[in-house]
Image 1 (cartoon, rainbow, N blue to C red):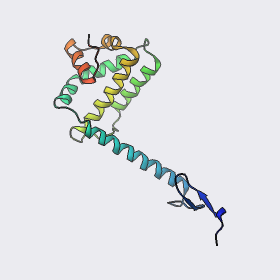
Image 2 (tube, one colour):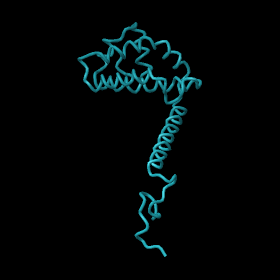
Image 3 (tube, rainbow, N blue to C red):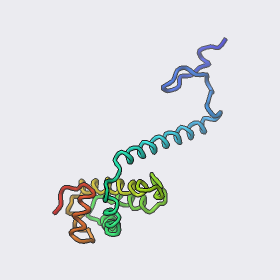
Image 4 (cartoon, rainbow, N blue to C red):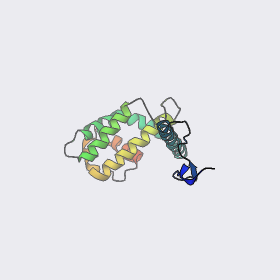
Length: 160
């Protein structure tokens, strides 16, 4: 007959025999748990992308602005007048865009590039919130019409 001391309380579970693991090694169990957690988060992000899918013409317009957008991000990231947090976000965004690893691989039709557009939009809104629309306007390398299109795509209200 087993004693209560032979059992341990697992977080979120009932009593289980001490020393019991799924794979036999605690480190493998931890890595497996982290991998499953990351997979669930990734799947949730895919569902959000599908629900918030790009509007017609949005992706085409975003691709047209891409060269100016990359120059804007590089200029903003190098501006010493902006706070260190803003510059860090912009540098991290540029690194994310440069890396071949994405939330959704780029070869997936429509959604492959939509995740990049969503990440750029979120970071750009964050930059405008911290640094103001004037900083973005000052560094915009394209035309005035391009800036208006950028503001429309990113949902920025302060078009000047």
